[in-house]
Length: 153
Image 1 (cartoon, rainbow, N blue to C red):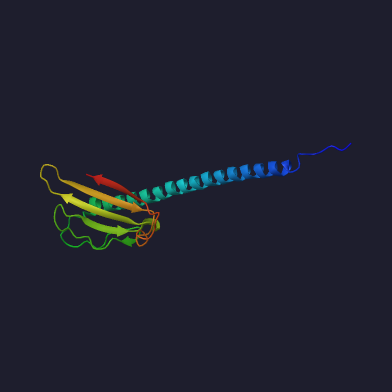
Image 2 (image 1 turned 180 degrees about the horizontal axis):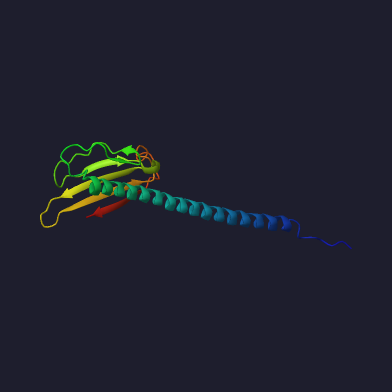
């Protein structure tokens, strides 16, 4: 007596389905991991940009409070931050921003200092923008981030 076996190929079908499910699961885990790595790198780069902005704002604050560099009608050329010259800082007029750019730790920082001479409320505004890239690389870096700090005193 011969028994007929109608289940030939079932094992192959089960193995193919199992392998497909594991492949889909692996691809999903890889996709999630890739997004998490990208998200954490954006957080890190955001901190670099913020630290560059904060460093530049503190530099401008130091040169304004200690040396009055942003109020002199003569060009102030000795201002440096992190051993980098800030260039010639020349006061033009109240309400006109004075700008400089430098690279703390290789990251770009652009600063604008504006003095207001309102007799009721004289104030100085320091607006600093920091980037997670060098100053030359901002335009070409597709993942360049900008963070800003504003001081008003």
